[in-house]
View: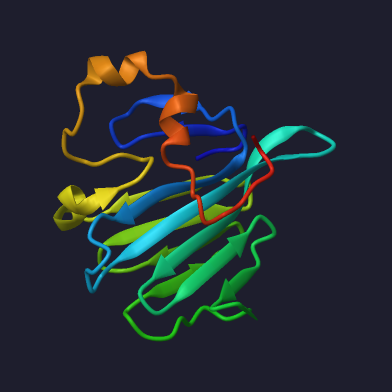
Length: 167
């Protein structure tokens, strides 16, 4: 996802997300998997510029949650941290002056100070991921997808556990 509300799916399809809210970007399809993870991005229209931006990224693991804000603040299990060490589960975080990167052996997430969010997954995870970015394996007829608007598509990946005042 990029500033302005643009998204590029794993299939290469691009579009603009018209409705602000929290969206499940990617998740391990098997909620019981030992290597389960989930990434939710909160898209918000910020004043005074009215530019749509990813204002926070939430990364969930079985026993750990990480939040990264648009100010590059990092919270682990609800506590603000300034260091790069994440406890257990072979989850690593590193930061540069412009980007925070969180990685495991299965995926890498980078979130820059320009609110660009990039998620990549390993080859062995290709058939195991769900969410708005799509799967890396064919799962729907491209013709059907093109008839669906980006609003309808992203609406099906709204993170319902992140309430919003949007109707």
